[in-house]
Image (cartoon, rainbow, N blue to C red):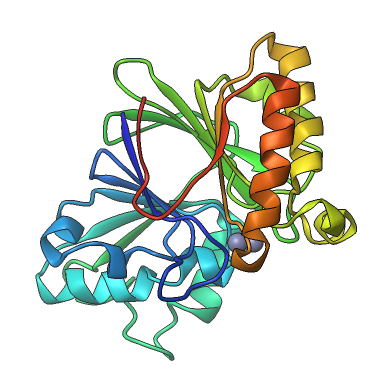
Length: 256
Ligand SMILES: [Zn+2]
Ligand SMILES: [Zn+2]
């Protein structure tokens, strides 16, 4: 499995993009940094988009990608849980802000939206995919992706602490998780459903206790202004855990 980080941050700027993961050039996890990262032909090769939750930084490029597909007569499959489907159809894909790509063109609408259920493994484009609920300020899931050759990735999306139930359900070799802020913002993290390095440490301790191993960990969704602090604090927990925990960055490629 080849995983490319198209975006690794929670703010967009010249040098940072919203978290978006591209798997084997065909599957996309979250869509905040999608269209500006890929050529039109690379966009055409996409088979499916999986959305973790409804927040703007994770869904922003859905209409932009849809317009590119619409103009070339292609279709794209988008997968998400029911609350995400409800939010997108009520506020974004309702024909008020832009063309309603769920209904146009009439004969073959550009977006095919497939509602998935948490904890139910689905076969999507040759991968086994399971959505697992995480703790955020709105309904949110992470995705476990298992490739045909048995390699396993878990991407948390946005989450706060309290992942014990989630860890019961997943066994990744690679964990891509969020760490939005540095340790001094722990209260903010608990309130808004985000992680800091020390909160991540507690979650990884629980993972190791339960599973008897630690996956390779890549951290995303950093606040750019806090990145230096986060990096230093992540280095400390990596030493404490004797594990591989690194910050992701735009353009990073991981081979699993
Ligand atoms: Zn969020
Ligand atoms: Zn976010």
